Amino acid sequence: MYDLCELGFDNYFQELVKDTPYTIGRVAKSSNGIYLTYSVNGKFYCEVSGRFFHRTEDAHDFPCVGDWVLFDYTTADSKGMIHQVLKRKSVLSRHAAGKKQQEQLMAANIDIVFLVSALNNDFNLRRMERFLTQIYESGASPVFILTKKDLCEDVDEKISAVEEIAMGVPILSVDALHNEGMDQLFPFLKKGQTISLLGSSGVGKSTLINRLLGEEVQKTQSIREDDAKGRHTTTQRELFILPSGGIIIDTPGMRELQLWSSEDAASQTFQDIEELEKQCKFRDCRHSSEPGCAVKKAIETGELSEERYKSFLKLQREAKFLDLKKKYGSQRASRIQADEILKGKW
Ligand SMILES: Nc1nc2c(ncn2[C@@H]2O[C@H](COP(=O)(O)OP(=O)(O)OP(=O)(O)O)[C@@H](O)[C@H]2O)c(=O)[nH]1
Ligand SMILES: [Zn+2]
Image (cartoon, rainbow, N blue to C red; front, side, top):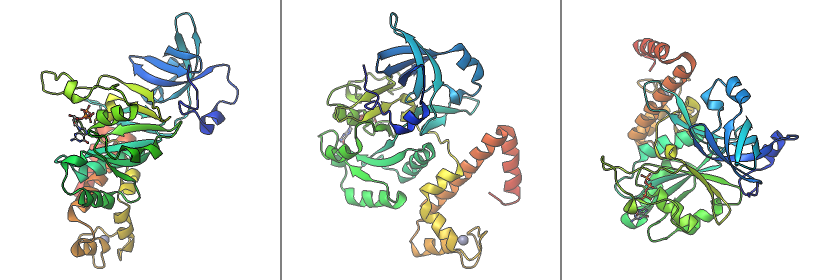
């Protein structure tokens, strides 16, 4: 039995389900068309109804972990049938692997994404910018968690560097191994608030989750069996309620990064550059040889680092291409891109 508020149900969703004969539930796990759904009446293994299946054309519109759904069930076998997915507040997605580039949903209705990065040799600002863009695109709010503080000599400098690429985003630094600094996370773990963790392999996501749960729910690397390629995988795809009242969603998809984003999200990550661009003398300034270019000037004076600017341009091109691809499909997008490159527009 679950309390809906504890699972993250709030006014936003309440508004969407004024009168329904169905039960409200949240998808905690999804595997081959079976959705483990939590509700006030317990856990149910649901499928989508025949009608839902037939009228749904887009893979996007099928349930994913974190979704709120309307379903009915039979108590005898704990099986249920999903009739509707409630409109999502936010959705984190990524590129599906394989030939056909497709957007794949990782998790829905996430309020906060903990962007986890290690402070030791894995520290990489450009990678953080990409994660940040992905989070802005999802509609969730980012919070930086810099782990392995114990393995870093210049924590303050690294924090300043992150501040520069992520204006206004909270930045916390912790040593999860020795349980230091973890109390900084508590304000974000409020009852009904859904959190997810995003970050490269080995940065310490499982360790953080274990600390928050106070128990070994996810096995960390030290006790995980490596596979033949020397890699390890997290097989659980789950949603759990923390003792503090927050909800954590940790799906394997959250553990990889492939950009699926648009120009809008890219520009949010690079607000400082957008601001500079507004100060250029010419509105269509390409920041190459135009007089009165504020971007070039900022690079010259060191106010803006050259790498950050390059990273901005790269992300902007990627995002622009993705937008074209969404609109026109792969082949036509490539032709348009080639054409525009010739005209010097990229
Ligand atoms: N020294 C130190 N080690 C840490 C810290 N956090 C995690 N580790 C160690 O880093 C290793 C990887 O941690 P995990 O929690 O498995 O990393 P992960 O991000 O979950 O990795 P994936 O499951 O591959 O995504 C483990 O050996 C942890 O003990 C920390 O703050 N300090
Ligand atoms: Zn300019």
